[in-house]
Amino acid sequence: DAMVIQNPRYQVTQFGKPVTLSCSQTLNHNVMYWYQQKSSQAPKLLFHYYDKDFNNEADTPDNFQSRRPNTSFCFLDIRSPGLGDAAMYLCATSREYGGQPQHFGDGTRLSIL
Amino acid sequence: AQSVTQPDIHITVSEGASLELRCNYSYGATPYLFWYVQSPGQGLQLLLKYFSGDTLVQGIKGFEAEFKRSQSSFNLRKPSVHWSDAAEYFCAVGANQAGTALIFGKGTTLSVSS
View 1 (cartoon, rainbow over the protein chains, first blue to last red):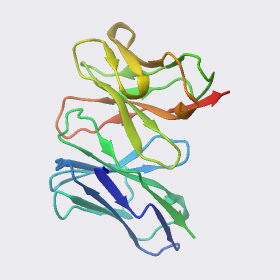
View 2 (view 1 turned 180 degrees about the horizontal axis):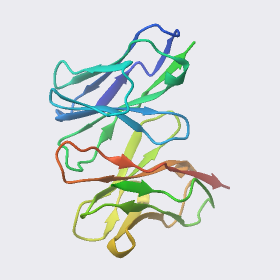
View 3 (view 1 turned 135 degrees about the vertical axis):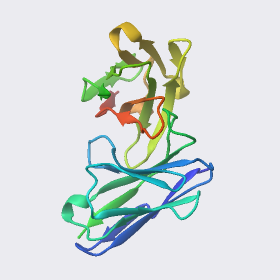
């Protein structure tokens, strides 16, 4: 049974048109993460939440925003997608910080036209 | 600063042969270490983890890894590779510290030849 669910699996948007990616979890984990992964590269951390406490990585573009309305859901908003934002976006959860293993969703592949 | 190095970008192994993927880390204290596998178009799946205790850890799918503090290494091994093992493998290190996330290596692509 999927425990970290990302929707949609594939998303196509137009250059500059806002897009929202969603993630839900059934693990009741405190921490949720968003990663960007480009082809043949390691996942790059964008944000993470402990409950509703938001942590933004220093080099995450301002174009990227996130919301976590409750424990189960987390959203990634890209306000004005550029061609360079085409990537796989991965959501992950962990019970706590402190080196706990992360559980990943299957990702959303974002394409920009 | 914490870091993870996977020296091999791409490895090809014959089906049935043994496999070792290398991982070196830099961290000031005892790290938490992980290996993840990613099949094309999928998310990352946890293979195994090391927190403390026995330095040889067993994971899923027949994988194991050995923590060697003296060499700052956490190499992944499998005695007999199957074609379905072809994937991207990521080593990651974590800290026992609030507010920190895992640091991933750049990954090693494993190809399996018949």
